[in-house]
Image (cartoon, rainbow, N blue to C red; front, side):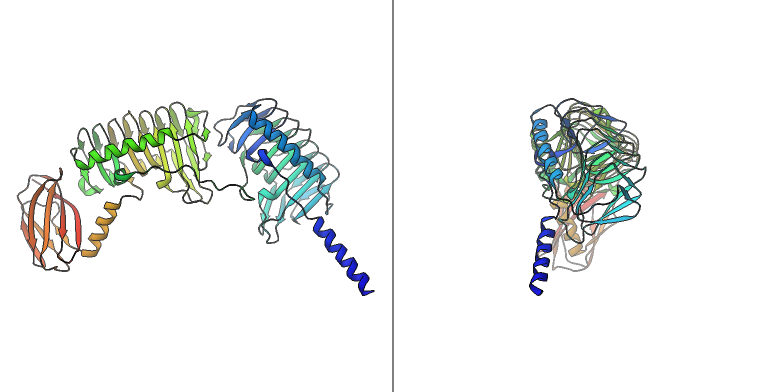
Length: 532
């Protein structure tokens, strides 16, 4: 009797193991968010799509900027069609181990497995898919008829369940109602797919034969399950450019109003005027000098590198850039004058080192209050905008990343906030009461700050006129104070041996820089201003 019970238990265990759901092989279709093997793929309204879009027999029409590649009856679409056939057959052949009622949701919770519904099915309210702590838990729904949802229905993933491991195989029309939130890859066999306004799909919508129609939806390919982590391209080496927040290789740099800048400001040809020294944490280069010449050369190298980067994704509608578009770490190309309307999101997908490059063959302008918003670990230091033309950031825009303009004037209007840099190889730059903070990378500024903190000497008054007082917290047995003008020429040197020293000054009005060197190796540098 015991042997019989053991045998039954063993058979049951083996049977359960065989009946575990297995994810199909998506192959070339995995890169697509929307695809039909045979049928049109059509959009109306403003849809946000992350993933490729296409058809192997038909056309994909009326999509705006898609964060993916459009494929109409090309080689990639042919491969995707073949892969979709394989995936459908695997889903269709999966052995079911659950047979739920055709009405899914209404607070229902399901565990991993293959679910067979032998007729038309629908989703209403909330359906929770519980992974049971297993990140590899697979859910397959085999629906032998049409599949629909009620407005506002939701599929919720818990306990490790992932959208990349959820699959809906439907033998009929898929029609998801307004504001449905659903997870997983949907495969409609010999029927159409309709995703209505406000549908949010973390997954894919496919048809083996039938049109795919979406209207004002949000769709993103799921992450995980072996999906490559996006890193974007290798970012350019900035060298001396890293220390400038506002810079032109050839053109006047002018400010009107009160602007707050962290980083250097200057030009290599022309004058830099209108910036208040007390509002600039960095160096104002009023005239070209050795530093600006180095920066101009390095900036040309940065531009050349970005300009020659191969493109991953072309955004086809430059004049409609923004509008809540979501971009992931890639090199993007816009082949005309580009207008940032509203908001563009940069989603690093959890990779804090991911790089974004947006290459624009034309001018760049923004709407008022336009925004670049960083998501899921994205950092402004890893964002680069290459612009072949003029740049105009409209009032109160909130911008992230380093803008490298080429052969065009730059205008940064009132209230603009920049985390990054605005640079031009050739073209004047005009700012009107802005705030700009450069991203990390400037080692000289970091060293200066560190040295200042370590030694702690105080200079006052600053601006000064005839006397500059230097108070040192730690007298270093005769520290040497050297002062340079804006062109880098030494104009004064003196030895300080007292805790507080009054240094006579007879210098023309302007900006100067000091270096304080102690005998024990302590160093401090900074900026001084001489007033009339």
